[in-house]
Amino acid sequence: MSELLRKAEWLVSIPSPTTFEQEICRQLLEWVAEKFPQASPQRFREGFRFEPSPPSSRPRVALVGHLDTVPPANRQHLGVRDGLLFGCGASDMKAGVAVMMEALEQWESFDCDLVGLFYDREEGPYADNGLDPLLDGLGQVDFAVVFEPTNNEIHAGCVGSLQARVHFQGQRAHSARPWQGQNAIYLAIPLLERLRGLERRAVVSQGLEFFEVTSATQANTQGPTNAVPEMFSLNLNARFAPGKSSEQAIRELESLVAGEARLEIYDVAPSGAVRLENGRLQQWISQQQLRVMPKQAWTDVARLDARGIPAFNFGPGDPAQAHQAEEHVSLQALEENFRLLQALLNQHP
Image (cartoon, rainbow, N blue to C red; front, side):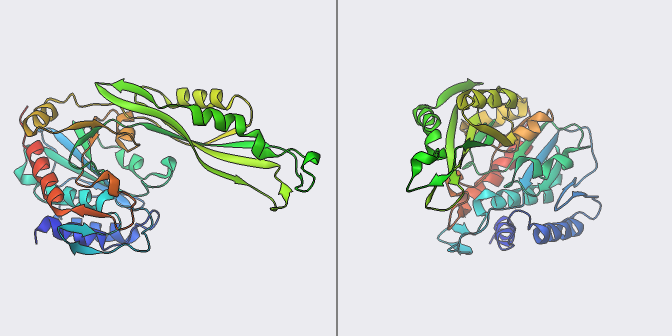
């Protein structure tokens, strides 16, 4: 068994659902103390940042990975079988964190300086994400690799995400005499019809095609089953392309709701720009014949972009395995991701 696989298997054996990253952070800090006694980790909550070597004049690359997972499924297996590593977070993104660890241990073999950022609560709300405080005082970085699952493709940029609740106010009445009230559910029909008729909107950014979509994802009422509901709430999730601000996305959602209900915006994650202009990256992508795709989801590439740090998604996991029951990652993809990362870190522009 390779050291890389040992690391990945060890990471998936430590449960770390969002807000319960204490144990995995503790054990990773022990790893830092053992392997990098000269390092001084900068910690925030259950995450940390460290550099395996003192800064030099060489290019500086950030390796970025979150430690948390979604809650495990009831039928999630753990361990290696048929060339696959099973475990909650195996694909999203503990296999990527294992690659980060292996690269940081081999820092002396690379033609650049490395900084590792391990953070908590990525799977939760945007505002509670643990990466931002670790970026404070980071200094100049040439680019960052975010090890979200991409099947070893480059997933550039990312769409923004806007979460909102739409509250329709009716009048409660006995369901045997509905004419005495106003059913709040029926008030939502015009908006639901508009949502059903919305088609995805293609937006091209730096030659990559992203899609803007708005979906109703939850619906609920309050009160007894034998009463016409006075309140009906929809959850809407809008995804918007790079180049569109969060403020623009909010205004478009307000226009869609058209004043028919009370709109409550409760989580906004900005989009991230496609930023692959670095010469080292361009030569690496060309020489390794890597496929470049748009990231049709939100990732912390957007948070790094907001700090002026060029970043892209590149991990060994399969995006289709993220958050799945029986989540797994291919051992071959794990080894290939590390091989490709080695080539990048030794690439000469």
